[in-house]
Length: 278
Image (cartoon, rainbow, N blue to C red; front, side, top):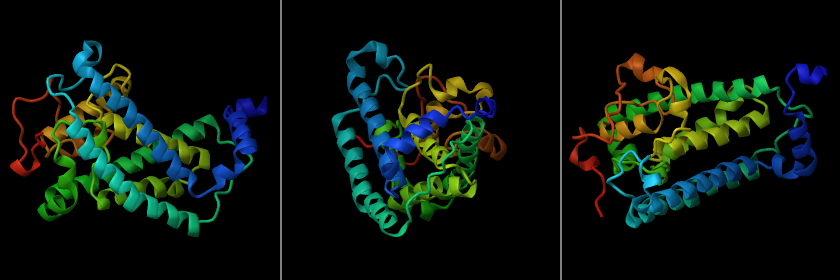
């Protein structure tokens, strides 16, 4: 009764993981495998929707740009860069962690549900601030933009595979914060993994190109969450909506813009940032 009153509703789940997957969870490779697996699972689902949307009106009606389908050349180009990044950046980093990082200690007690939820929220808030500053800087300094961030803006109507259509430096920056923030906030390892999964989920959702009723921006009240429409607006109007998740930094920084339905009549991006044409 005391455990239930303290909110340790996650304890049975944690005990199951502890008893049945102890060695897997302690491996330094586990967080990498978890994040990569969730990413490709989500991207796979969204890509299937992208391919079905042109002939399935029930899906296409939720697309932010229903008149501009995702094509196979779009898919192969973005997938190629994604696989390249995983082979030449993520895989070596994972091997380095496996060689040099000690096994993850697994405490006997699970976090309380309150601690688990608050830890994920805290990591999201910190990550949101870090990437807002990084993103703003890499748009305001031309050399940084051209060298590291321009590749991500080659598509001005993002779809799920654009999520990791990134330079190696941007991928490293995002991965570093996602790894270090739970450590800074002293999170339980279960909270850390929960944050990683949620971070991948909302990052992919931001780029998916859909406005589903269950999307985060439709669930979080008062416009506090940007979501896919606002990030789509950022790809259309690159001087706006720099925060990856929440809206408050763009409100405070004067960089917030409200998306217009069904895309924009015109884009403010320069020629070198326009969408790749087939």
